[in-house]
Length: 163
Image 1 (cartoon, helix red, strand yellow):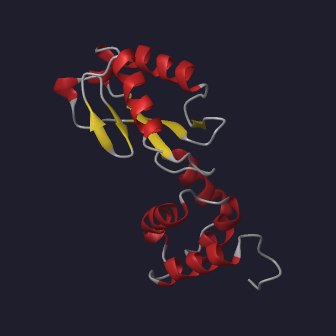
Image 2 (cartoon, one colour):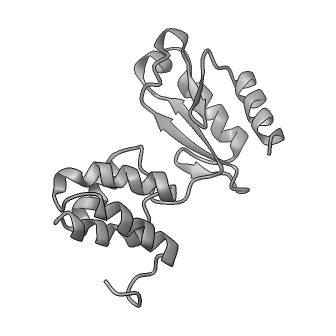
């Protein structure tokens, strides 16, 4: 692909090519490639899907299907801070759904959404490993147990104050 046909910024395009160069051209490398792209860019840009597909000899639809199937991958840039609320059974049984509803109302965004100010993205998690201390959430990969709506509000206020 030449420089006139891609719409990724040149630095993102260079990063994508560096990532793709680390792997052989087999489909078994798709998940590691997607993880690397998201780690570097913060999400999987739609403009990168065709290049990733070509690199691993898959169709764009197949790569897009993987990106949209796994909750971990994002197709849009995330907020500055990522909040993940556990949706696994133990947390659900201890009030995670009510906590999630509260979080959506408090932040003013839905699951997989980002606040209007770009500060927070709200995402589901499917087990944070704190089943005995549920419900759990993570903010920027720091886990918190036995969460309540009040504790959630305090954590969000604390993160906002650190900005």
